Length: 391
Image 1 (tube, rainbow, N blue to C red):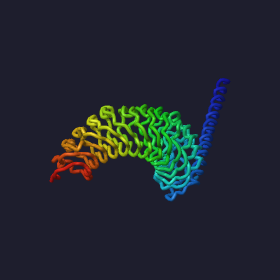
Image 2 (image 1 turned 180 degrees about the vertical axis):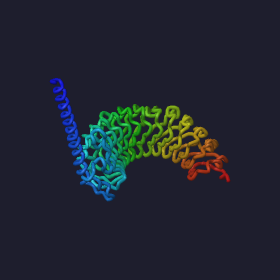
Image 3 (image 1 turned 45 degrees about the vertical axis):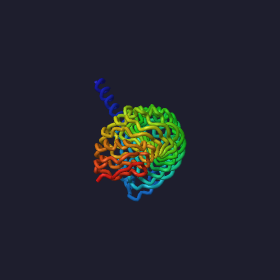
Image 4 (image 1 turned 60 degrees about the horizontal axis):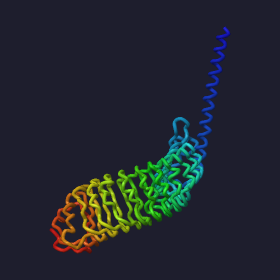
């Protein structure tokens, strides 16, 4: 009898304790959820929302059903905040730093202005931060370095000033995608960037960056897209970068880089699709090894000081759609300078060909009539070419 009473009593205790735990968990979740709710309402209060995107942000429904929100299943905390392409204007409230479970933020293609809140640095779970094509100003907050799990940072098309954080390679070791293109950033690129071994995309063009590029860039063995265009970088481009076999696109246009292209570039970069060194101070001849980079689609050597004859075998580059040699010192002024044109007849996708302002000489070859019918731009003035234009 005693044993039956004890067992019954124990069962009652377990049942009561289970109810207590369930109630406590519900209260905790509710309290945590309230933190997110208050933070989001504070964010809403700073926004102009002509499309009424945040109209659902009220007490009538669960915040996990609010527009732009995704919650985790376990804690019912906001993990995704996506307000991209919503015509929203205003400043981003520092209360965004209270959304401690956020992993993904996307505010791209809106009218956000003011500074990026340093409080974002409190979001230690954050993996993706997309602020592209807004009007954010000020410096990149140093506190962002605390987001050690960050994988993607897109902030192109804003008005950011100051330096790219010099400790970037010590704090964002998981970073794979960095886009800061089209801002007002200045200063030099820190050598620490070479520590970001997972980096696949580095896009920092259209800024005011200057100085020499760090040799440590050659350590980025996962890189497939590199754009430093339209800055004021000077000196020699680190030769080690041309050994990153994963590279598919390199844009160096509009800088003050000097030196010559490596003779083995076509062998060390077999996956290369786009190469633009336009408007720099490069010298020397064009590497014949580029014939080996059979995936090439764009080659732009214009506005440099390249010289000698063109020896690239374009028969092996069938995907080429744009090719420019304009404004160099290519050719010798003699017969044979334009022999490469016969090889271009295999480039059936070619749309633009620039030969103008060089020293190309000799008779205009008849093979020019066999160039792709898709060509819409062809320039060859200011050379030493003679003869008749084929019908």
